[in-house]
Image (cartoon, rainbow, N blue to C red; front, top):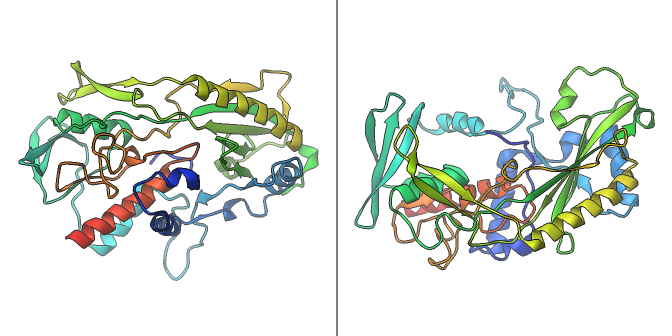
Length: 372
């Protein structure tokens, strides 16, 4: 529900490490892109994007492209109201109702997974007034994301050598600069440019504007002599067992579930990548004609945890000693508990994890359907 609708694939060399055949994963990427309506059409015809993209390409960044977005640009037609431009969880819930009815518990909290003899029997939940209920199920799919999924597993005494470990995120540097408004036509449009991660460049670069994000195009704006451009860089970090979450047994929430303690730090290699990112931003700014604002500090290192790209705390893999689930998201040692969220991703590199999460979740759903 909280994302900027950027939908990029993870670098192919990293996907080779997944316990999923590459060709099959690429097929599910295509399905996910079709479902999420991913394309670069959101920025097509925008002078702001096209002019800066030409400058960047000519300035030594030929791999730069328009930013792929999960945005449905199809107009309403044939009595079908297309009101959701940006794809969200609500879109899926609404469409699912057209296929079959389902129950949706709101203002409630899952507090424990119930296990008996290697099999999940159901989930204990509590309502907002703290009444307890048991939801019985033949199969359970846990989709609470990077921190809540391992929290619930560990609190339910479901653990192995990997649950809670290998927490991943990215380093995040941001620079803000200005360009002259007179360099662009009156039909400015919005800015969205993407430079993908490569083996030589262990980070991803994005350009947004004017102001912070693409949705500014929908706002009434006063005419200014200069335009703001944000350059965002996301750096890949080393995958480490020590980066993890643990439970604070002496500190519990209102439902009696222990709070999470996050253990995360950058390595020297991670900091070297950040330095590369700073150097790249300088070169990119020169190529695009972007200058610092009134001589202010060009760079800002965003605090750890502010970037919503966390993943990996229940990563999938073939070895139960180093992974929490198999390639279908089935938790090792249990016959009917699946995970379908960011936590199963083995490696994200410098990319946004959402598209990969959706692709893997669809694959897990297909597997459950076939096994039913």
